Length: 174
Image (cartoon, rainbow, N blue to C red; front, side):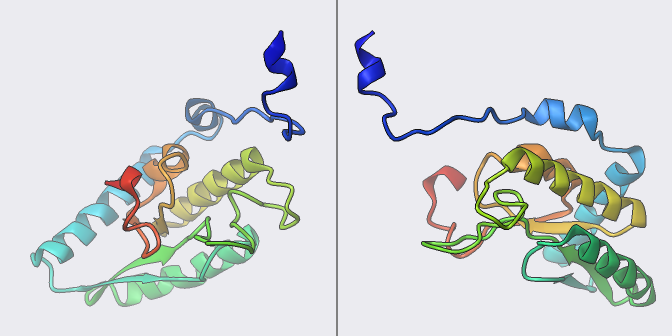
C-alpha cells in the first residue's frame, strides 16, 4: 500500500486513549459526590444571578502536580468552608492543565509524571481519582477547561468551570 511510505513518517507510536465511559465505569461518580457537585453548582449560580449575597471564592493552587498535597489542601480547606459558609461559597481550585502557548509543563492530565512522557491515560485517571476523593471530603472542585475532550472525563465531578483568557477566542469553545 503506497500510503505506508507517505503517511505519519514522523510518528514513532500511537497509544490509544481510554474512553470517558470506560474511565467512569472504573471510577464511577457517587451519589454523595453528585449531590455535592449539584449543590455547589446551584450555589454558584445563585450568587452569579444575584440571588445569594455570599461571595463565590475559587481558591487553591495554580495547578495540581501532587495529588497528595491537593488532598491535604482540601482537608485543610473543608473546616474553613464550614466556618465561613454564611459569607463565602468556597470552591477549591483544581486545575489539571496548563494553557502554555509554547514550552513548559502542560499539566497533570497531559504529563502526570512531570517527565514529558505524556501518559495521558494515567493523568486522566489520577485527575478523576482526586476529584472523587475531594468530593468524599465534601470539597467541591473548580477547574479550567482548555479543550473539549478532558471535560468528558471529569465534568461530572466539577462544580465550577472556567474558560481562561487564552481560550476565550477559541472557536471550538463557542
